[in-house]
Length: 142
Image 1 (tube, helix red, strand yellow):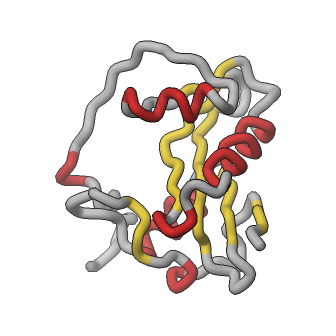
Image 2: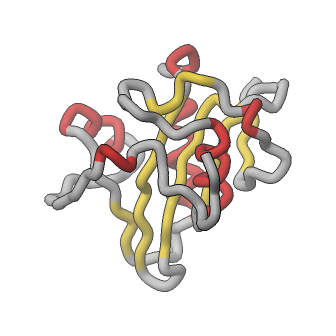
Image 3: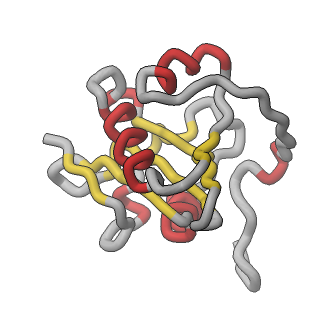
């Protein structure tokens, strides 16, 4: 049974199993992953009964007009069961009083996002792959 929560409270690095950020050459560590969940303006997590995170979605927002969904991840073993769709629907519900909610995705993912009510748009981006593991917090020693 999958449960959903909108807070990372009580989640630790051990609850963030490997398998997230698949295909990234330098993925964030579980500690950095936890930090990005805690510092996002909005988050929805999918948890198995043990409390382990099996999926998540994050959003950043100005809280007035706009939000951006940068990350949606579901562990490979849990894909195809509606968890991703549940995460996005819950996030869109959290943001339903905003004028716009945007995200960038690969063309092959457009049908998925269309299935939850999103439409295509044109966007631009910058990717700094050398920073893929995450920005270090001030004063951090790794």
